[in-house]
Image (cartoon, rainbow, N blue to C red):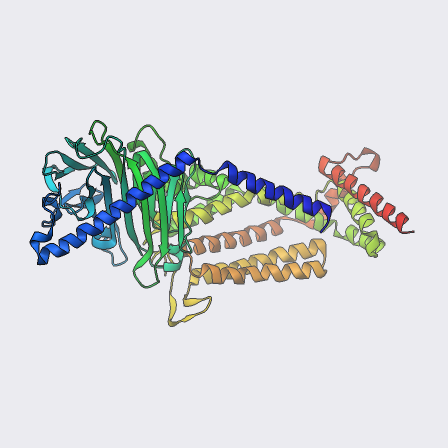
Length: 617
C-alpha cells in the first residue's frame, strides 16, 4: 500500500469520526429521549396490567381496583358511529376512540367490491397519557359518545373524580381528510405540570390491494416527512427499522396506490418506525409500526390537533389535500406519488401529468391514452432524433475515408496518430462524432419520465385494454400452475412483444453502427450486450404493469418506423457529395471548441508517449 493510499484512508477515517462526533446528541437530548422511552415502557406495563385485571375481573370481580379514575371505562360494549361523504365512509369505534374501518367509495378491490383500506384488527392506535398516579391507555377503554352530526363525532372519556378527555373526529367535505382533536378538560389535578407530551403507538397491516404481489411490493413502504426536509422511507424489499432523532410532519403507511397518513400540527418526535415483510399469499404486504410522541397540554388551553389522510395516491388529489391541511406548513403529500429523480420529476409534474389528464378528458380508453401520449412524445423529440440520425449518416458517408486512415496506420502503436487524423478528417468535413450523443441525451429524461409515471398512475388501475384486464398489473393471458424460477407462473404478452420489438430496434441500430465503425472485436461485444439486454428485460418486466410494457412496445415500434422513414429519406451518396461541396480548405478550417480540445488532448498524449519511449531507451 503506497503513501497516497494510506493518507486517503486516514482522511476518510477522520471525516467519518468527525461526522459522528458532530451528530452525536447532547446529554440533554439523550436524557429527554430516555425519559420518553421510560414513559412508553411505563405505559406498556400499565396496559398489560389493565388487560390482566380485565381477565381477572371475569373470574373474580372484587380483584379489580375500583379506585382507578377510569374504572368504569375499562369495560363496556363496543359501539360504532359512521361518518361519510361522497368519497369515503368511516366507522368510528368507541373502544379505543379510533377509526376502525375506512371504505373508499371511488375504488374497488380485486373482487370489484368497494375498497376497504383497513378493517377490524388490521390495525390499532393507542394514545398514552402519563398521569401522577396512573396512566391512561386508550386502546382498551370504552369512550362515551357525546356529540354526533353528519360529519363529526366527539368521543368522551370521563374521569370518576371529575374532568374528561375528548376525542373529536371531523370528516372534511369533498376530501379524504379527517381532523382529530384531542383535548383534556378539568383534569389539571390528574396530570403533573411537567407533562407536555403524549405517546402514540400506531400499528397496521397493509393489505394486498393489487393483482401482482411482487410489483406492488416495490411501491409499498413506510414513508415519512421530516420537518424542513424531503420525504424518506423504509426499505420496500426487506424488514427495516429506524429510530429518528428529527421531528416528523407526517408518517404514511403506504401501499402502491393508497395510503394511510397521520399528520400532527406540532409534529411528531422521538419516532421509532418499523416495517416487516408479510408472506406472499397471506393477503397482506407489510406489517407497519410507528411509536412516537406528540404535544399535549393537560390544562386544555391548547388542544392537540391531528389529521388522517385515508385515500388514493393521486398526485393532484394530494396537492389539493395540502391546501386543506395545517396552513402553517407545506406537507408535500404529493411526494407519496414517486415521479422519479429531480429532472424527471419536473418533467412528470409539469408535462406528463397534464398531458395525461388532457387526453383522459376525451373519454378515451387508457390504452389509447398511452398510445397517443407515446406518439406525442415521439413527435416532440423528433428534431433531436433527426439530428442524431443525420450525424450518424454523415459518419457512414465518410467511412471510405476512415477505412483509408485505418489502412495507413495498421499498428497499435500508431493508434494516437490514427485517431488524430480521423478527428482532423471529421473537422475538415464539418462532422462531429459527438453530434449524435447530445440529442439522445436530451431525449432520455423524457422517456424515463414515463417509466416512473405509468406504475404510479392510479388511473390505470383496473382499466382493461385488449387482452389485459388491468393495465396496472401484469397481463397473464398465458399462465400455468407451477412456479418457474425467474419467470413465475405466467407469461406477459405485452412484455414479450416489448422484448421482441426492442431486439428488432437494437438490430437496426447495430446495423447502422457497423456501417459507421465497421465490424471489429469491440462491435461484436457490443452486439452481444445489446441483444442480451432485451432478454433480461423480459424476465424483469414479466411481473411489471402491463401498461408499462405496452408503452415500451409502442415506443420501440414507433422508433423502428421513424428510423425506416429516415433511411428512406436519406441518400448517403448525395449526402457525401454535399459534404465534399462544403469541404473547407485546411487554411480556412476553424475547429469547434470540442474538436480543438480533443486534438490538444491527443497531442499531449502523443508527447507523453514519446517521453516514455525516450526514457525507455
